[in-house]
Length: 184
Image (cartoon, rainbow, N blue to C red; front, side, top):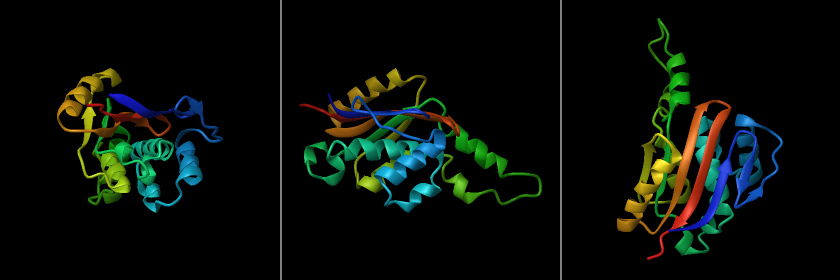
């Protein structure tokens, strides 16, 4: 496996291929700042939960700076999206639960859709026309994803966006994503 490009996002910083990207905002506001500065053409972003926004921004920056999002190099175009975290969609699960109260029999459908952590992989696949595998694993720690990637690449994939995408609270998140190419 060869790591073509990588990104790491925390509530206060963004590091793309070893270079820091200057940001003014922090937390969820930073994700919106990054969207407005580097993307700006996908209004559905504002309907997404924080986990999906985090994964979406990480994928956008990663692909934009690798050249893959422009389809200029087909060998770098991802064929799969494979992400993992420890807390699934807990932040949005809590938000959804808060809309349910005694006498309220109609909880928020717009929040319900994001009570599945794999929605982030779907959002990325739709945006980039990825028709291959999408998977979201719930694992104890980021290192637990590597054996899954190795076995998946051996049999099915040539290129993937893969990594850790964690969001347990509105302003507590972490993403480390890579564009990986399997060299046969």
